[in-house]
Length: 242
Ligand code: PGA
Image 1 (cartoon, protein in one colour):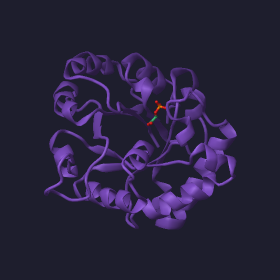
Image 2 (cartoon, rainbow, N blue to C red):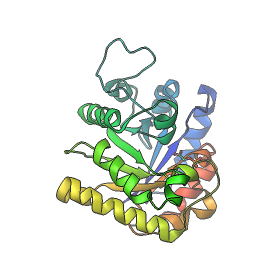
Image 3 (cartoon, rainbow, N blue to C red):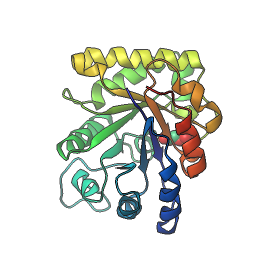
Image 4 (spheres, rainbow, N blue to C red):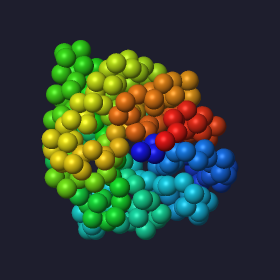
């Protein structure tokens, strides 16, 4: 499976940043799929600048196709602006916006109906890991966030590793990705074997190659280090070939 290296710009960036970043991504290593998820107002500009060479995604969408939902965007609007992916259930949305697994499941269905590939994020807090509950927490998130006909990507992002410079040990990433694969197969049957499982949380040029080489790691979801094209490309270069 080709690895997917996804950049999550979060609430960073300006229209004026797009051209130089998109030009730098012209140097993309060919053995991986690259995806950039900028804030909504940059999508259309990115779409024109990238011309389809790198995929684009949103960072959230509403569960409804349209309606009186001030401040929200629908999956079909993202698609219209050039996106083919959408990140859903990121821990910052679960925490800052109180998103529940059931809401994330609704958004995932909306994304699939609009023809977008959802990237559904799961991950435990530091307290949950210390309590030995990490795998159970993630299994519960998967059980309730993924619809029974899920077709998309899962991102394992331990909350305590996001933006902190801390990463789990290789053994912990291997164990969790194995547990996620088993849960996906239990939930989805054979379709669970083809779901890419990304690792996210403090992925940098210096640790990307070792994380991306681990079993069942199908790519990376990169926050801070995706903002500089040079670092993002260095992370992509660390992905093993197929
Ligand atoms: P980080 O963020 O790479 O800055 O830790 C990852 C994410 O939140 O997707």
